[in-house]
Length: 297
Image (cartoon, rainbow, N blue to C red; front, side, top):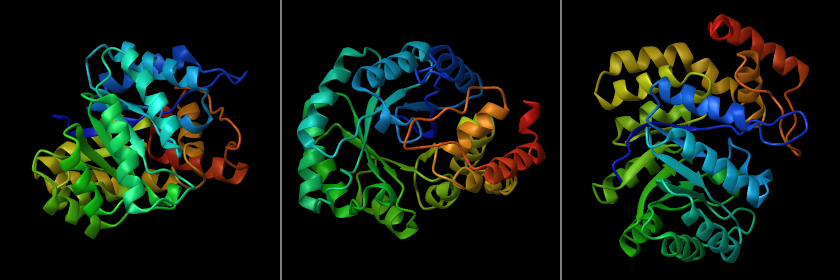
């Protein structure tokens, strides 16, 4: 896998009737690419994959791949807490020509052991081979951590397991991954506010929520850090760090969708059990968006 830099975990826009807003999704993809994003992740947590029907999920991934048209790599989120179901669903991704990788989070709720996670991800890798697999460690959402030792085992056991999105929020864990994984294995921060720390210890980029709203700015920040231009990277983080935090004032992606709606990019409709931000939160988001100049974009 050659991908490095900033990838957007792109939202899935919905119409008022609850259906996917395909035209808005295409427009977002084109804007992201025109803004200089390095790659796109369709149907991740920010894309509300957990509430998409299987046909909708495949359609959304297909739209992102087709619209990108090879201009940037596209990864597809594919996560389930039943390995049997995950394998069945992942097999369907082979019908999407032009897909570059599969991103899969820890099995949620079941709280499997490290051995259970090892076998789960290995089954996925064998199913989609030779398509690259990116692991997604997000214990805050799944209740289990994927230990660095297990990641090293997976990298050795399946040649197509080639990357990890690390969202544990633990800098020492990211450093351990950098020190123990093969040099070609790619490590991405899964948290906007940890990106510079992760890159500082050797990570290869960021999979971002905030780049939904500010793709050019987050991409610049990540590239500056990767190029050892830390003064520019830190200045960009200083300017935009409040937005990084604001996107989690309520459950993601409610705040980011609210800001995108204020910017005229898509609606702020979500699917239950997610709901739009409370009025007080929305007022805070609008005030911040105005201060940052986003409402002029």
